[in-house]
Image (cartoon, rainbow, N blue to C red; front, top):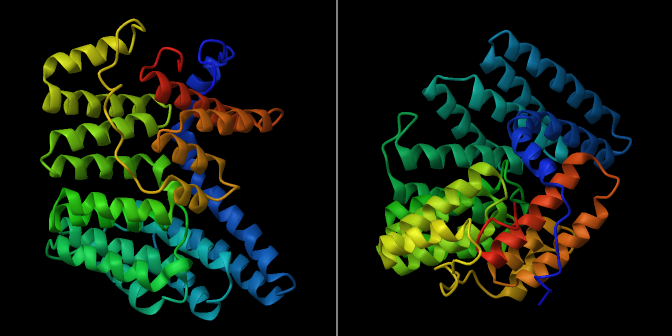
Length: 370
């Protein structure tokens, strides 16, 4: 264990608070950054493949032009035309999927036309993993919530998610943007189609496939909702604590996690425990009622760490935190902090938030984390 009395965060709290305000801007920039990285990856993967490079550049320029003109169907047609001709173009396929996702999420309001795009991607583009995953997730959402002219059918939604995950296998995109949402949607679907325990079991399986999901706020929400559906207040509290420990150190996520803990404490131990928890967040002398609550077991810690890989420090920190290995999480976060020295401010802010997560997980309050 580390010495919790002598280890202190430097006075960099303003950087963390500033990072909260940057979250919205960062989300707006995400799609542009993904496109840029896709382009760079394409050139690296294709090397001298000038024909692919030229076609990708032309499509990338043409799609936004048509999008700006309101010709959304034609814009998607250009992207799909590239995909049909260059299915093996690696991350260039990802770039086209990102472009289409932007049109579907922001511009194309006709639900039937959106359904047609999803169906086409799912039935005709299984050789383009990112686009296939985009279509699969769209169809799963429609069945799960009863949109796009589809009847609400959670069981069918879970079946579609399984079909897509099984078909893609190792080709399933390992990111939040195009791949992880299939796992998340599967958990939601099983919650309605079966019960909370089935959803939690699926969540554990998904975490082993993609441990980085433990740092995703939407996945944590799916976990907590699944726990509520178990109708077991102790399971709900165990998962609420897990979400509190894993939540990113941003204002919105910390607030959400504390609300879940408060609700779970009321259900499991009564309102007095919730009041004690609220007091413990600002008073280090007040014992947290979470201290004796076990974390939901996600699986074998060694297997989870192996799945996270050596290079994904964020995922490794989440695995350590989620399995109660707070000291090891702090070691990883400290090394991340060291490596961020001299880097862009955002990297420093990310490292600081991970350090704060470690303190939050160890202390079960926000005093030192702040």
